[in-house]
Image (cartoon, protein in one colour):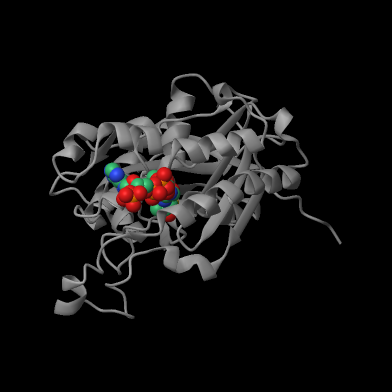
Length: 334
Ligand code: ACO
């Protein structure tokens, strides 16, 4: 009996797209009772971007995907599968991935959405990479895309100052042995679901006059509880992916945490004994873009030259579900 070795899978192209409209903390002061000082001190956020009236999750996902394809030197015809991680799909169905498949004219691609809140991009990388590992598919687009501004309650200062819109995309493909995805860890605790949810608009509470009156079509969050959960789980999850890779945090050059709150990011770095100079942070400019936050941060750090070929990066996220997820990659430049 012959045993077939799994292929090494990694990111071979990356792109991101953040909508043009920048909304500063000062702008938020005109909308709810808040202050630049409060938002900056408690979250580290200074600015976020919101989509235009005619821009939807599938549109910004498509823009990011086009850039990732260009970066990979591929065309949409090469893509076997499109996975979109999103908590803010255009519609309940069809999937946003199918809308992107149509926009890109990716004729041979299968397409599906994956729902794991802010951990969605990590979950999608973990699942999509299996198709390449086993040899079924060659090139896969994984996209994290969100238009959270559409589902935020602009009368609730506890949530509306935190989130922003954006998209990040990668092309997964085979890389040389020893590079690419080295370790993965995924987790969930469905009991914590009510801490962060969008209660209505699904089949449990379909849209009604009452659901609209009770503001159930917006993001609801128990911020303090989510904060405690995030602080606990971020460091733990990163260590588990490192264990899977057979590595220690001292061997890691870069940490890319989900960009939700600078205090959560700092505590994750502390748990991993990593100085903040090794942590990629852009929460100040984009706020929390949920499943898009990690690929946007990765794209910036790759294209500005901070992350170099051969370096090891740990990415770790947490979010609605509750979910958490982490990935260790060794970066490989073509
Ligand atoms: N401006 C001014 N004051 C505010 C604002 C605001 N925007 N929001 C809340 N406050 C007030 C509160 O009303 C409260 O006032 P009170 O003491 O008079 O009642 C006070 O500030 C303190 O509120 P806390 O909630 O205790 O503030 P905290 O320091 O915990 O910060 C925050 C709140 C930023 C939401 C924090 O809990 C947090 O970051 N939680 C995690 C959120 C998160 O990461 N969510 C994303 C999950 S990922 C996903 O899947 C989308």
